Image (tube, rainbow, N blue to C red):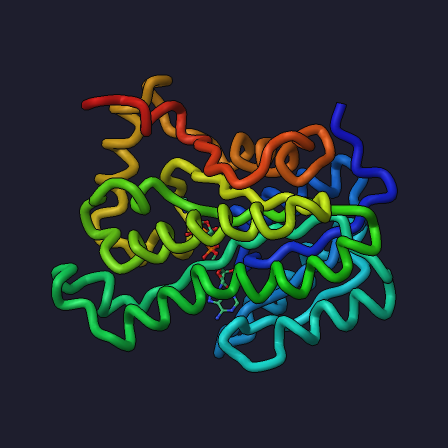
Length: 260
Ligand SMILES: NC(=O)c1ccc[n+]([C@@H]2O[C@H](COP(=O)([O-])OP(=O)(O)OC[C@H]3O[C@@H](n4cnc5c(N)ncnc54)[C@H](O)[C@@H]3O)[C@@H](O)[C@H]2O)c1
């Protein structure tokens, strides 16, 4: 039912093979999409190399740098796509960052700078990306944008700390963007994934315990797979979900509905 033939989109947030964005890109490619991939900052240059290696295995026309904290970096990505594609159908935002120090201190000790960085990279970047994407999506009669979130936005999850309010901001921003851009047939949703082992999650203390608890307490009595998350992302980024906007859709095996 989902067909991405003739559809073009950009994926933000591939760091390595374990990244959720990698699985989503592979799923979109398998469904026929043409992709632009971006890579974030990494002093060792591994992310760029990983993204280029992945790009070689799929229909990727652009590999572009995009440090969302750098002035003009997001705008440069969309300027390149405007020049070569003229329009755009979908965007995956799979970006988050908090300084390890701010994740490890008790929440009330969160530094002002740590708060600012987490909010800027993990939530504000969606607003800037959407503003740029919307101009191109209007040329195609609409589009779909998905940001990745986590239940730590709504529940006080042990050790998730400063990332919790950042995800709450992201989900709220999704609703305001959906409201603003709905008349242009541009949709914006958040996908709330269950716990998965990735580079980012390795920065959360006792993540193994979080994973175990999530599996034990989910309605499905197991953890979700990255492939399940990727399939739902492909659904939300496609026209098949044309009536859905402003939502946070949980792909967590039903963890969020359980009282204990
Ligand atoms: N792993 C989980 O358990 C889980 C669960 C729910 C939601 N999420 C969310 O999924 C998304 C992807 O995370 P992941 O688990 O795949 O980890 P990941 O480490 O593979 O991906 C995080 C990405 O953020 C990018 N990034 C960080 N700072 C950046 C910056 N300044 N500019 C541009 N990019 C930057 C990194 O380059 C990386 O590609 C995040 O939003 C995360 O919060 C993860």
